[in-house]
Length: 288
Image (tube, rainbow, N blue to C red; front, side):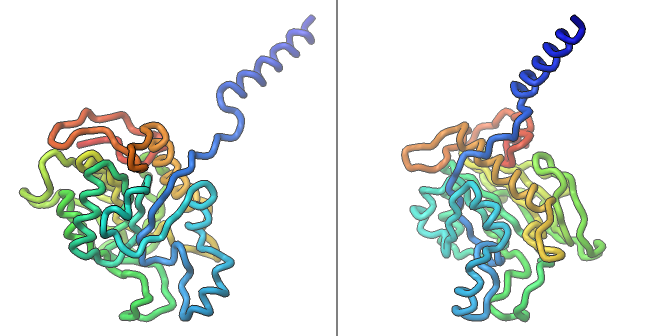
């Protein structure tokens, strides 16, 4: 009798584990992601076209991680905004300075419901094979003041901080690698637009913003995209997977509008109710 009860208990435990998600989590729903970057994220650094062809067989690790489940589209420009219409998410990873038309296109697209992640590093620590001044070298200092000011933010940098990589705990991301990060602060009074709101977290490393009907997650560092000891390391992969997966799940939850891009809730000019932290998501659900 005791053995029969034990067998029933074990069977029930197996069913309970399955019902509670004991199996591997499902991958996030696929989305279309635009990428604007000066970093070797989509293509490796190369000195010539022939070298690019030879090295194309091994894509940089961030591209590999993203393209496991999603479509990644490299973009040369953000203008006109019609080129952003099919995107579910836009990643700006230490981009070159944006032109005035690009700033306008990006701002309009976000305000109309677009979702963006911006990595703005004031002191890039990623090593490059190209010397200072070489146009092939990644952008050493983020020059994004016009769009950040439009969104009510200013990027600052403390030059007396200790150099070296460390991990910062970011809500929804877990341990996040940084090296000489910047910090976001509210822009001077009068910057930004009425109805926009940003919540600054993790000692200024992260800003989660509602811009019109859209959302922006800004991170004042780009060390996430570095490699050490020949690879990214599991912490970097997990952080990037959490970032993209959160936006993908949110996109699937809110659906798409008739133009094929994610439509975020909220109305410009009205105060939003703060939403609870979206544990696995990194679209910025909270509003200040």
